[in-house]
Amino acid sequence: MAEMQLLSRRYDAPDVVGAIELCYERGWTDGLPVVPPEEGLVRRMLAAAQVEPQEVVGRVPLRRRTLTAEKVAINAVMAGCLPEYFPVVLAAVAAMADDRFHLHGSMLSTGGAAPLLIVNGPAAPRLGFNAGGNVFGPGWRANATVGRALRLVLINGCGARPGTLDRATLGHPGKFSYCIAEDEAQLPPGWPPLHVERGLEPGESAVTVVASEGPHHVADHASNTPEALLDTIARALQATGEMRGCHVLVVSPEHRAILERARWSKANVRAYLAGRVDRLGPDDLFVVAAGGEAGGFSAVIPPWVGGRGSQPVTRAVADERPPTNDE
Image: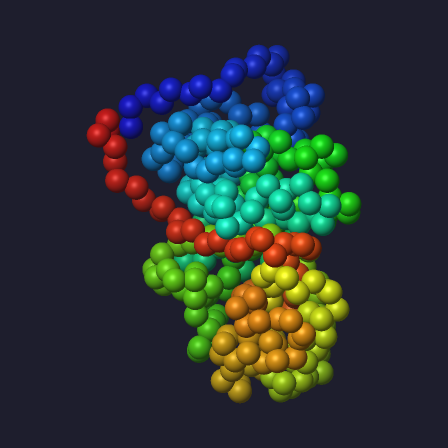
């Protein structure tokens, strides 16, 4: 690619610590230290995805904000992303800026939702996204930094700073970073990956963004039939109290084994739960395989409270792009 022209304003700092403190002073952090977005790092991020700095990734009309690749790259650097993660970040930002997601409403809502990212396809294992034990927890750079990049884009690109545009009453820890992968290597028969259910090909990489509350653990170490297990999960879903919008059910390997022995597909799971939970439709529930091998725990993730206007959005990840005419 030809030399990239970066348009963002430059700031001087005496050293790395001074640059980090400058980011704090300017309100550019999520409360944690960031990687100072030195120009060379931003260029490497853009080059990894073969995008021009001023390419528009998404727009937020109600905020009069345009999210360019350069601005997204700056925030990805600050979040600690490796350059090879950047195509996933771009796809996630584009999905979040889609009108169907209703980004403006979820950002400013007192309900405190966060964009949950679910990564599928070959990019997930290749880039080291965690789909196993501690899937919602710390320890994996790809999950932590890609999820954090979205939060920094919301803060710095959309003005969603806590106490101003971000009006969450409580919030939840997923507002720092909320990113998982689906365990496609251990999917039971009849369990297509989420992105395939959403219309993409198995060989494509993709990210799905859902406006979500935090995960609610569902413990069941006693059930040995699908009906008994799903009755436990149905009670957890009903107890969340919010039926408008898209729910996510994350099923651990122990619980998946019960369903697999009985040859229950994802469609069977959705249909059964829709019959047990008031006002829950089969199309309002994503079933995702993830989590550690040991422990009879799954999780239900309720939608953004009041999020009737927010729909999940799935975007393909552009792992490779054709070279530009300048290359």
